[in-house]
Image (cartoon, rainbow, N blue to C red):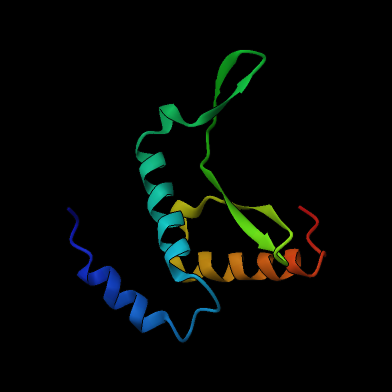
Length: 103
C-alpha cells in the first residue's frame, strides 16, 4: 500500500495546466529515477549479449488517432522536472498525432 495524498494533490493542481494524462508524466519520472538508482540493469540485448547503457531513456506508447500506438522517447527524464517531461511529451504527442514526428 502506498501513500498517494501528495500525488493526488499534485494531479488536482496540474489537471487544468497539463494538456493530457499527467499520471503518465509522474510515472515517467518515477520509473526514470528507479532505473537511475539501478543503472547496472539498464541496457539492451545485442546479438544475445547484455550491453549496459550509460543513460536512462523512457519510451511512452502514444495513441495515434485511434489507429496505432506510436513510441515516443524521452531522454534523461530523471534530470527533468515533471512539467518539463509533460511539455516534451505533449509537444511530441502533437507531432505524432499530426504525422510530423521525425524521431
